[in-house]
Length: 344
Image 1 (tube, rainbow, N blue to C red):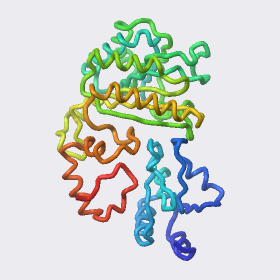
Image 2 (image 1 turned 45 degrees about the vertical axis):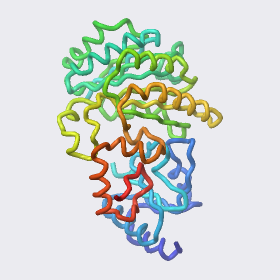
Image 3 (image 1 turned 90 degrees about the horizontal axis):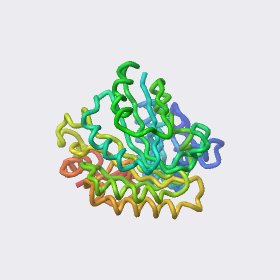
Image 4 (image 1 turned 135 degrees about the vertical axis):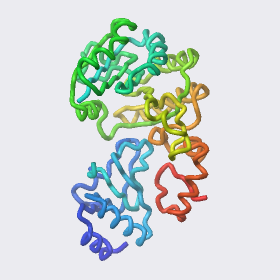
């Protein structure tokens, strides 16, 4: 790729084109997962659809390896590449929130209650469960820093009165929490609530699964591994899959696992590269122990580079149809820096 070709791209591209040595290059190329370091030959920061079309055509004409970046949170760093073209799309872009923490000693009771409550919860309520340590940030009381906990993070989209009423079962059925943070806030504030806790550049190792059932035996496995959680930011989250997701047939769209009730992620997280091996081992051991209780496949963005079988399990019976679509629109697998569906 010569200078003239890059100059021609700059002449038709409204956004910024960055090369190694440019002032912003290192900041923009940095990945959310600090365990992974990649150096693209070019970074194209798109402003609009026309920019996307322009730079995709450029990458194809130049025979470049192309990676796409949306919000930039991909676990194994598939939002970038070495020596190729990174197409960066990150520029193109009233609730009640209730984080409640209990000591890990209460986890069995909390998890069993959550399992039974979620199917009865109103659609306006989103509630996910976490096993973690209290982060060592000023957002939380210093006396609780590092303490192993079970947490419920709840978002209710509605009026104050409705939100209070929806949370009543939590107040009535569960023990006194260590911390109760229910408050009203704009949705964008909730959407970015974890940003101060999980900044860019941490060491990350993800393992995920879809979950249909949460039997008592699986709860015991979760608690066993949560009791060994590394001292840092590592966690397990169970995100609900419910509501409108279950209204759609499993073969209606690309994603097929609509009979699952949760999306589980186990994430080893630490700011120090020296701890990368320890958090990776903890996440893998945890996943291997709980995986027999879970469904096949996982949310794509909770997977590292785990091979074709895991990708195929995620799309299930829809995978052959997606492979045919891939053959029609991308027979050469040009867009392959991803959890790849191969043409076929």
